[in-house]
Length: 158
Image (cartoon, rainbow, N blue to C red; front, side):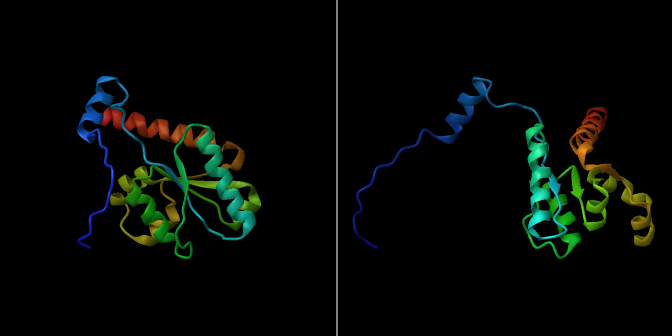
């Protein structure tokens, strides 16, 4: 606006900060695994609470996790979101699974790898590729196992 504005500035410089953190060993070279995405099938209060509890249990176990925050009406968009995030796994629980006390865990990395082997969409859906059903109480344990298997695969292919 052409008027002098009194201000104070300060910067230590991002490159200097990064160098200092590297020298102190504060920046790990470890690969960061994208978060597990908990899909939202129902928006009622009870269901949302369950999805949030899944995220909380995973986080308490040291597993990065997030709940899908977009429009849940199109389930395919949720999986596309998880894919864009690089999520290794998606947690799915609709009304049928909830009634049985189970969740579906979809291995998105293995599913992507296997997708080239299945020719048509009908066969793909029927095969439920790289997807397992586990009791809610076994969610954290099974997610840990699946993430460990993925890490082993990355190590072998490196």
